[in-house]
Amino acid sequence: MIHPSYVELMQVVNNDTTVIGEEPVVNSRYSIVIAAAKRARQIIGGDEPMIGKAAGRKPLSIAVQELYEKKVKIMSEDDFYDDETAGEHYETE
Image (cartoon, rainbow, N blue to C red; front, side, top):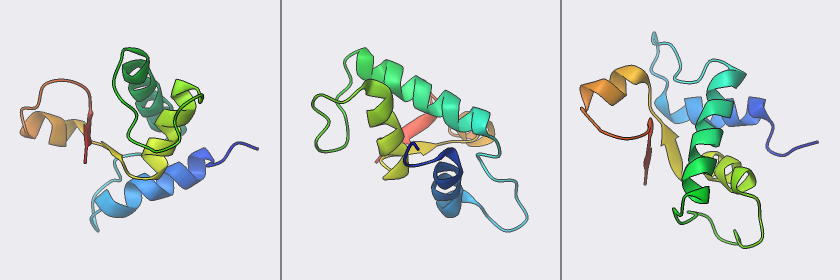
């Protein structure tokens, strides 16, 4: 079994961002998969991993661990366009 599971990732990502009465940022497996894939492509493209012990690990594994450790934040489209931020739909700490 892969750790963390997508269910655990969804709980971690939504825990800090969900406000009572609002829809969570991540409400499907698809959202988690897309976010991890985008971050993995950035790592492949030369971005430095934001976790320790990344040497020798696959980019997707690094991206999933970054999401789990809250090193990467998934932003909703509303937040993304409200902030008028350019680039991907995430921000780093």
